[in-house]
Image (tube, rainbow, N blue to C red; front, side):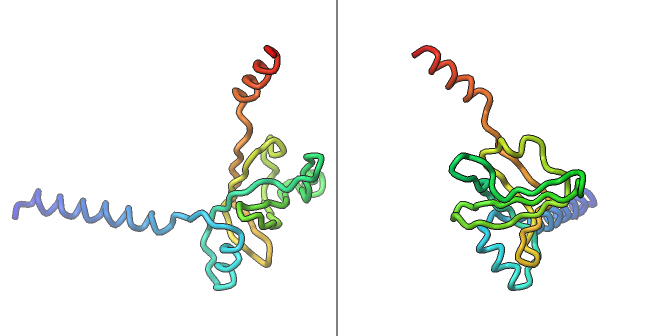
Length: 141
């Protein structure tokens, strides 16, 4: 075999190794029930949970706690996952901007002491284009 063939095989093997190791670190999407089961089994891997904020009949967010004067790096709220399971979520960073306007929330983290501790929060806010389209349709009626 030529040296170039051996080098090519080594490069391909390294690339496969890197891909396999990064795929093992990727977290999965689960419900709060599965996140609780993983924590009870001692599995502390990070997971994604998709949900909506808990709101009362008037549309106000229930269970949100953020006081930047007391502790700007402590934010907690209640999230309802796709199976309608409610869970307290703690985020040790400032509250994300436009959090109240979000339609859907994706959190990354794990369960710790019966609380989901989030490392990241991704928000899906309503589209400004949909709002404009609704306003135009109602104005033309």
